[in-house]
Image: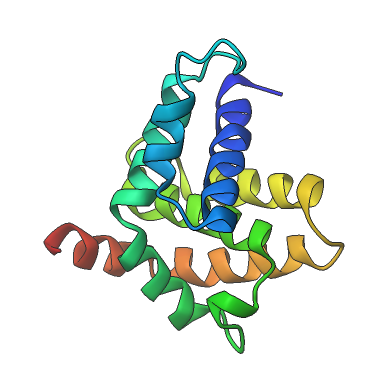
Length: 143
């Protein structure tokens, strides 16, 4: 597993835990960084957690619009965390992460962490969003 893949996995861990505990992911991350019980946190993990947290309201709006028949509350928590991260990379990191890579990485994460149906679901949602990614990027940059 490459360093960015590991950073994504760590970011999902933080996003998932924060979601489950009802706390801010950046606060959780900053509480953990430097702790002797926690392995060092990669810079890209920090970038992802901060980016998802900063744009979470808009990320959740887009996910709600494109996750046909699924509300955020109804999604498995792991899938929700992976989708948030994948969508952040699709729309806010597209200069750095090609859409196909963002989708593939999200699908690989959810294969390892969630249900048998989750990879198809995550691929479908992110694929639909990637299809209109250019238009959505313009709207998120105006926010």
